[in-house]
Image (cartoon, rainbow, N blue to C red; front, side):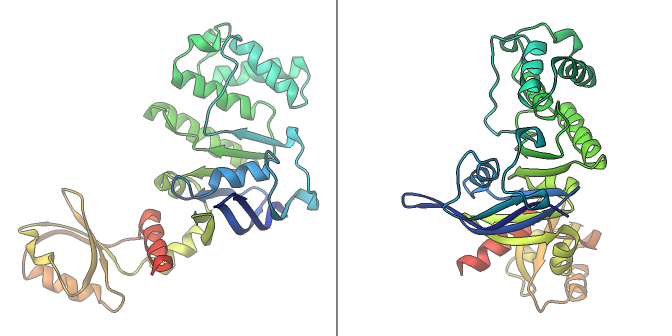
Length: 299
């Protein structure tokens, strides 16, 4: 069953087409990545899903074909964070929980549970403005999951967090998904999506350019990317007839071969020129796939 269906939705702001003819189907229980660079239309799409703004065209349907999303059924972490700075943390979480349909006692229990999970129990009576930016972001995450919604929409959830808390949030997201929560992760940080999501949609300039299961998408692009570590001059790779694109990373180089190139031919050429420490055919990154798809559209 689909948790969310977008049918040919579009949104224009005067001369700017923010989203154009976007269609998606997200099944219940999926961890879904909505990807694209800044300005691609991700946040506009999310705001239409949440009924903050209305699409100019198209339909948005939820579980059982409903065209309206009840507040208690969704948790939303916006990219632009915002909390009531003068409120105490515990009072704020209780207040936000009751807005989502919880009783005050339920909201208090869940707030204390999540504060314990984040090691913030001793900060519960602090005012929000007394917390660091990173701690405020953790409180905002708690606010969007306190009512345990079946659908969770996270817009750039890792922005501004230190590595320890990035890992903490990541583990909690996976835990919620394992429990059956449908999660939409909107980000331009494609490496995070590669680690978390099974299904993705790439959008650019308001239009969908790629949609499907991540493993199947990568399989389509996985035969012509080479990771090569070697000792010797890099000059043998300059203008090489087999190489379409080269990215240097200090200790190694990643190469995109031309469509007709044979990886074995490149290996042979490398062995004749340098001492090879590693040579492997690897899956291309989502970032590489995205760049290639954008290039195809622009040609």
